[in-house]
Length: 223
Image 1: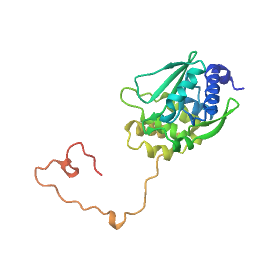
Image 2 (image 1 turned 90 degrees about the horizontal axis):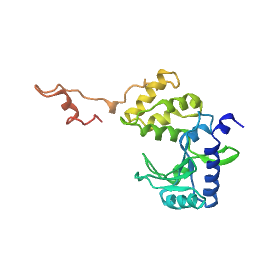
Image 3 (image 1 turned 90 degrees about the vertical axis):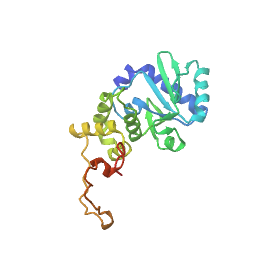
Image 4 (image 1 turned 30 degrees about the vertical axis):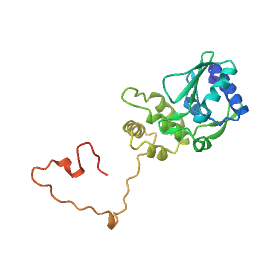
């Protein structure tokens, strides 16, 4: 048994209970959050447990945990429900920054053996992409993500993650850090010549026209 498995015994015991309850009720789920990384050799887990389920199953899943002796909590956020198993918090997440949890997302999970129990675990690409898209100016903590990236670098399709966060400034900043730390390689610039249909005609701006007018009104990004 791993040393940290003994250290984080309560949350892992809760994980086993929840997995057994959801399976018996035939509720599809994913184990997400820091446990998805820890299950693959990542850094230590936190004191909460993230389970991802479909919106249609949220209320039934919460009732299952309550019937098993856990204490329910209904937070103001409209994308999750909570239950307390002693001091361990269970988050039942049914909507992410990319929308509702779907059958397709659950089907992308990987069957892993965690604490001697086989369970459906969120793919690392999904975990990093979702976590990065939650970052904002009020919550900007890269520490845990960097630790997970360094520990799991060989197990992640980083190009797939980069594609999903390409429009998110804090996601792009994360990749700048990973490249600087030599955790991932910078993307290779294309050296292929432009096709004839890709040529761009450039014309001088009229006198007195602001330079941003070439791209439309202020605030509009070029296509």
